[in-house]
Amino acid sequence: MDLAFFTVEGDGLVPTPIARSMWKDDQMHGVALSGALARTAERCAHDAGRDDLSPARWTVDLFRPASMVRCDLSAEVVRDGPRICLVDVLLEQDGRRVARASATFLKQTRSAPGEVWTPSERPSPPPEDVVPPSEEPRVPFFHSEENGWSQRFSDHQNASRKQTWQTGLPIVVGERPTAFQVVASVADATSMVTNWGANGVEYINTDITLALSRPAVGLEVGLVAADRIEHDGVAVGTATVLDRAGVLGSSMVTSLANAERVVNFENVEYTESGERRSV
Image (tube, rainbow, N blue to C red):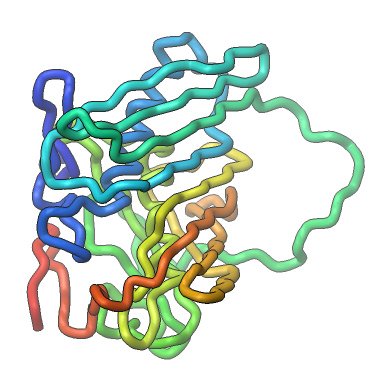
């Protein structure tokens, strides 16, 4: 578990090179940020004695670019009831607020007896002979309708519908990530499956909203693009979230056009150690 987004420094977290964004060399990506915030929220709920609850909703506001410097995180319980615990989290750098998050933990009970509409078809995990199950860190798999599943990013620089399958990385060196930390961090890839087109990623997401009907199972998480709406440079992308056990929720991002600084994957690949290289 040496491959991780952060190392611990006192009460703070320091980003490793794998947390670096492609938008800018000194900027962190949202996967690492959401993971760090989720780790803090989960620890806060645990310290409050609420291990009887499951994460049900996760919202992150990415309102200022995060630099590749130390992160200081704080959390507080703002509502604690018999069936609910609401935790707010703040991430600061050099005394400035960079991102915030809110987690809702709910108590699972029996389902209500009445019949309610649900879709007749659901997305399913990729075939195991194509994407073998693994909890070891690895390069993400992507699927586009033109080229199927592969770990070659250049295969998916097109305008077709996309999905991804990822094994979550540890948030902190030496710590095994929890299933919630994994799904909360991978949820940032909703922007990839909904905003990645023929020219690359031309939209940068300003938030993440994740809704879960049950806890994730294991460290593998998939996202399938479900919808995308865009007007005048503002895009809303929605994805279905699933693991090896099936569908467990949905995720959404709101994004702004950022065409002057495009993330172009046409000639970029990643090594198993997370190093980015040109091909």
